[in-house]
Length: 421
Image 1 (spheres, rainbow, N blue to C red):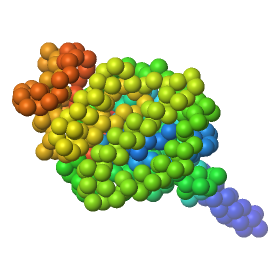
Image 2: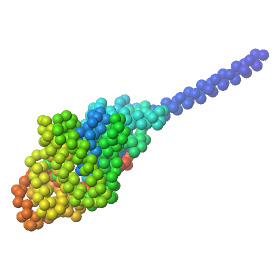
Image 3: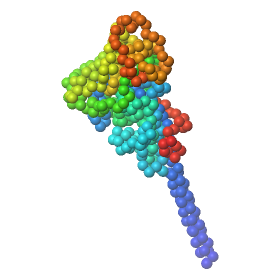
Image 4: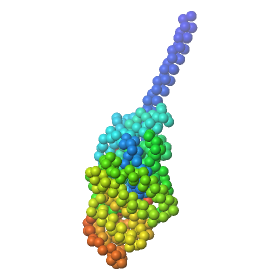
């Protein structure tokens, strides 16, 4: 009887111990798995330069525009933002470094992007271990920040694209997420020519970017950026838009009447590769955008004397040519962007070198680094305007290009421990 009870007791103990050991081992493996979470990706994203401008919001928090807009995405060979994102539950908190300096992770727009990305994953995989992790973000631009070169667009597009790769968010969802970081960032999610459709829904779900045509559709489309000032602009785009919407008497007509018509004309011009119409609309919309800024109270002046000299030069040059060869546009800053067909770029570079001479060795950058040929005498005679030595810092030659790219892990800005290199 004693042996029989002992045997029964032994079997019960054995079963309980086996159950306990199994559960403990499973728990241990789960904890180890959670502790080992580390996922990282590095991406680049492009600058975009609008030819139909976005200016003014109907919803500040969701960044919903009062009009649609359209842009060309620039090649990343010359201009891009680069971002590395790592997620791990060994990180104590979310952190971000921009151009070698740690920035405030609690920036509202940055938090909007992080919240939206995590919400998409939560809806799809509520038990994903990635949701327990914190992110480290390291980003750098290879061009001046906040100088009218769409740095925030490239930066937020790159951030959202990289986060999307880490958290498994579909590319089709990324433009609306990038928009809540920086409105025009939604256009940098795609390559080629991209429209940002303003939408009508209060929640902004239909305010998204749509590719009008890929870069391969019009490979002859090149871009020259004439950098007048690479410093930070005096009035930010956010402040400028808000003041314009509150005080301008012209902005309503532009948004409701002018832009819708121009959007359709511009899409047709791109589809037909009609540079004359493309150039005319680009110039007209840039002029009107800055007219609206002047109509704002107090007036906003992004252009300076050099900017206006570029406008005058392009106007005279196009008149002499008998057609539009140099289609200028200015965003919220003094730097000129000239859209031109590849065949006309050498002559336009000669034009710039003649009227804005520089002694710098690296004045011409990007795809054209050598000194252009002398300007033809017939053109110089037809355009009797004074030269402005040293007025431009440099000229960057690029072209319309592709959207965001995922890079090899060797290109990471973060070390294996998740901190900046």
